[in-house]
Amino acid sequence: MELPTRQISLSFLLVISTLLFSSASNSDEFVQCLTKLSKESAPTVSKLIFTPKNSSYNAALLYSINNLRFTRPTTPKPRVIITPTTESQVQSVIYCAKKTNLEIRIRSGGHSFEGLSYVSYVPFVILDLRNFNQVTPDLRSATAWVGGGVTNGELYYRISQATSDYGFPSGLWGNVGVGGLISGGGYGMMRRKYGLSADQVIDAKLIDVHGKILDRKAMGEDLFWAIRGSGGGSFGVVIAWKVNLVRVPRTVTVFRVYRSLAQNMTNIFYKWQSVAPRFPKELDIRCNGQIFLSENSTRPDKKIMVMNFESLYLGRVDSLLKVMKQQFPELGLVREDCFEVSWIQAMVFFTNLPLETPPEVLLNRTILNRIDFKGRSDFTTKPIPIKGLEGIWDFMFQLPNGTAFLQFTPFGGRMSEIPDTALPFPYRAGYLYMINLYALTDEDEANRLQWVRNIDDYLAPYVTSNPRSAYVNYANLWMGTNNPRGKTSYAQASKWGKRYFKNNFDRLVRIKSKADPDNFFRHEQSIPPISLSLWSDM
Ligand SMILES: Cc1cc2nc3c(=O)[nH]c(=O)nc-3n(C[C@H](O)[C@H](O)[C@H](O)COP(=O)(O)OP(=O)(O)OC[C@H]3O[C@@H](n4cnc5c(N)ncnc54)[C@H](O)[C@@H]3O)c2cc1C
Ligand SMILES: *[C@@H]1O[C@H](CO)[C@@H](O)[C@H](O)[C@H]1NC(C)=O
Ligand SMILES: *[C@@H]1O[C@H](CO)[C@@H](O)[C@H](O)[C@H]1NC(C)=O
Ligand SMILES: *[C@@H]1O[C@H](CO)[C@@H](O)[C@H](O)[C@H]1NC(C)=O
Ligand SMILES: *[C@@H]1O[C@H](CO)[C@@H](O)[C@H](O)[C@H]1NC(C)=O
Ligand SMILES: *[C@@H]1O[C@H](CO)[C@@H](O)[C@H](O)[C@H]1NC(C)=O
Image (cartoon, rainbow, N blue to C red; front, side):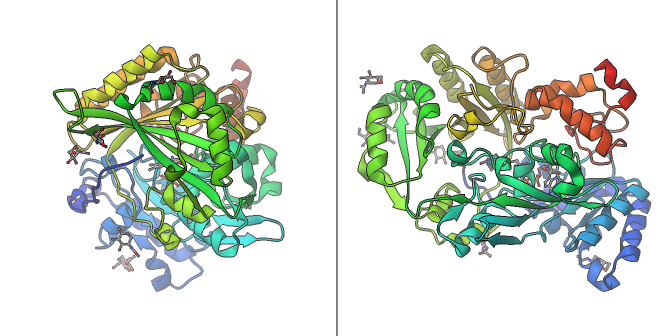
């Protein structure tokens, strides 16, 4: 996805809407409770606590907010932000939040599409895991412990510092957190070879609602299954993941080529739909569609539609060109389009930075532009006919250039070999690709949101139905939300739960009902517990 430059504006937040919540009593109590329980000295722990009275509060809040749609003055703000450095501080946060009746939101990379990690409409605190940022590779077992607050970029960089023979199949953009990403499954450019990020998780450290620190053995296989795909924020705080590192060649090949409508884009893309999910596992080609302005356009508005085909091939350019010639000659890929690089440089490339940028850039948490957007997702099981595609392009032409983005991510390969009940993520064999769609909402918001709704309706006949599919990591509150207080019924939560998880949703509800029956860990689309006596009615 290529996005326009727009730096975050601090002025958004300068109107301190926290004044709305001036009855600060339980936040004072919360802070006192934390300080009292702390094993560290009061001055040490106070440095980790931000309330609206601190001048650094806004910076602490904005630190990782990635969707600027949730930085408006009207967006509810947390009473307290706490950035713990130890497990016992996290335990205290859970204890004190319960005691003072505050909700907690757990934040890792802050990339939730709907601000679920830092917005709530009831009084709340943010538990920000930015200090749980250690990556500890163990090359003998080809595994690593990865802190719950680590970003993709930090993970990739730390692995590359330890070895050139291994990588990890996490997401594309360096600034996204593995706390949220792995909690919802997580896909990247190696998913056709190694599956989802969560498929490579072999252990975890979770702090549950009782403040207990649980590893895989202690939490049991049900809970361990649930935290690897249910979307985060429903079962506890993931302090660290233990993951398998995966083999990568010393040299990989990347490319990003552009084809406009005038350059046969529609026919090429039509073919892509059926070949991309069947390529060798080493090859991933995904597509990003966008509108630009060009003098070459034959339209009065000068718009052109362009698709970029971006790719990672786990091998050298010669063998890539052979595969392309056999399986996808329509793209017309030539050697000059391709770059042979190390795996870590490829990860820089998929963070949308110039290929030669030193990999240390992956440690910079503010390197990427933040945008104000609404996004949604779907999965397909059959190619969309040409007429259907042309209808999608027509929608793209309705918005100004540079404000709408289409993304097509092919599945197949390893993804098809993993049973759809192995983890909560159910879109495995038989699914061709995922469609994502984004519109910028920094201007003309009502219209842009309506546009997203319209294209959502338009896509219905072309994508899976009953239930219509969606990816939990692309959270979309239009599908429904939990009641902000009190209980949510199984039927109500099924409206989004079945769309994210299909029948795995029932197992998630059952596990939640046992692990957190009072629903302490909650957000707008968290898994709701139901009373176990009602279970037989389900
Ligand atoms: C620009 C951009 C690029 C993206 N690229 C990809 C991609 O390539 N592949 C992909 O699969 N997804 C991608 N996503 C989606 C991404 O996986 C989700 O938005 C994910 O939830 C972000 O995780 P986070 O830690 O950054 O977000 P946060 O907003 O911090 O957290 C998201 C959710 O997880 C919960 N959570 C976070 N950390 C923890 C924890 N340690 N323990 C328990 N709960 C936790 C939060 O409470 C919240 O509900 C992208 C999103 C954006 C905005
Ligand atoms: C916030 O203000 C309090 C009270 O002045 C202070 O003790 C604390 O250290 C401040 N927090 C931070 C993170 O600076
Ligand atoms: C466009 O693509 C189609 C299908 O792949 C092909 O038959 C046709 O020759 C192409 N046209 C041009 C002008 O390249
Ligand atoms: C416009 O057309 C010319 C000639 O075909 C081509 O070289 C150029 O790249 C095109 N520009 C764009 C923006 O497509
Ligand atoms: C991170 O990137 C931003 C944007 O390019 C830049 O302004 C900032 O100085 C960088 N931070 C560090 C520590 O390099
Ligand atoms: C739209 O196109 C113009 C001309 O190419 C460009 O200057 C502008 O930045 C584009 N707008 C967006 C939002 O991309």
